[in-house]
Length: 280
Image 1: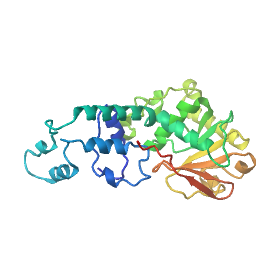
Image 2: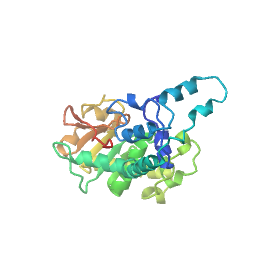
Image 3: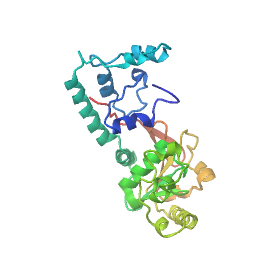
């Protein structure tokens, strides 16, 4: 059911626990929203004989009568367990292949390489500009890119500390850190130095590389599209005209939709439509 928005970490939590979600209103999700979510498989499972209809569930949720829990029960006299188990296996395979942080990182790297003009990912590396705090999409993207690119991924202004092992016991993570806190090892400067000292040294290294053509691409996680002009990045992130002469491409990853936009030297470029990953 839609709450603040259509997408929610809970949908993936249900799948990760080996369960089939019942998603009220799934037919109303816009085509390019939750584009990696296996909508068709979930719809098929919700329409199996014996499964309560959406209408009956909505009415039960709105009812103040007692014993409404009975309305949520599956009618096993007509329920097709074989069909259900087949759909569940398909959902679990889909989740393992396409809904992990690694799959998200692979998807974004693949999209970068397919841009026109092409953006090769060579030894220079990729810079991810993002807030150090974690909101789910940028945080999961960060984890996925670390899994794919390893030491070739750099972040600015700092790393997302909460996802690393040295912050595993922090108590102020969003959503109590479920699903992302402490999942990556602590490496590099942060393994050998205090946090503040490592942050300062890391930022110095990133700024030096930025000024000297040290990146193949710069990805900016940005919920809107207000930084189309490359020069405008200088105001917010300290990135200026040097990206033009150093053949560094600037891209925007929209954290709400999962779209990747290519920004040319002076203006917004085309927006890549997400690859269709719906179930056949």
